[in-house]
Image (tube, rainbow, N blue to C red; front, side, top):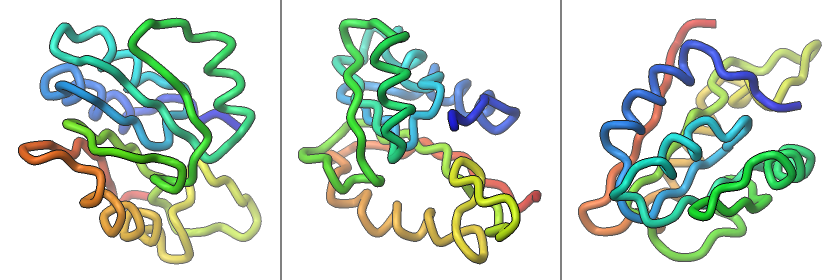
Length: 140
């Protein structure tokens, strides 16, 4: 299931358009809206768009062709090496709903476990003077 861009995506998109630079990684790319916006910037060299879902990566590779963008299946940074000048993340942040089970929305039992994992791993991949662009909400 591909996460359909919503209000949170568009809030983050504005920041990506302003602040993305250099070598960019888009974690949990979904529809790749953030990756595409970053790739269109003159000061962005490359964009690695990753998602845990194999079907999402397959869809993106088939439908999105841009010389600066490459796609990889990865659970956060598990299959990623190197450092990035900009790390973009629109995380799932809703508490787990055992009835719905939607990984594009749910960030763990309490909603923030995925974000904790992200910050634990992100420091190993953030270049000196790099930046993290992320959106988070407590609204359910």
